[in-house]
Length: 267
Image (cartoon, rainbow, N blue to C red):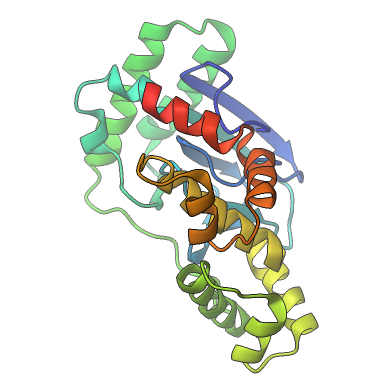
């Protein structure tokens, strides 16, 4: 999915088969439901690495920084549901049924829920009736909320994963400061090249890509505050140049900071 919106659609689905990874912007102002039909994959979401196997459903709230990471067997099939918040506003009580953070539902043996996901995808691809989509999605939310437990997939049991997650936590805390790969490597007593390679292997992002994306994610949140101008926001999230900030923001979000702010105010 190339854009950070639904191209004026409030609900959309995609089916992917094979070994390709999604080429998205890694965070967006919509809900994403990632259902793995077959195969397995690792997923980095904000501050943790999880594993998904066939029958798992990952739900990502808006603005969750995420990236899929291939495992040994890259062949898999997945169904993606993209849900705009405006679509949810048309379903009374929907927000109360949605998780506030990324979560994994294990749906093995829960054929009714799995079938709802397939039905949503089929309806979108063939008929696209808005009322039917709302009915199916509403039922999906209710059935998910009635699960006795919401299990979070365990992290990949690997020493380097734990070490890199410490680095991620450090970046999430220090993103507004003047930090770099070399400074971070020095902080963790690691060789910069070694850290760079491990970071990419474990998160799917390069070091600079993750840092920029996290900064832009925080900037997008701050744009709802009318008391701060773009320059103030750029500086507060770690950019020394407003022009550079605007360039990176548009590349990742698809629009300028000011246009994004106007859209927030319109919504």
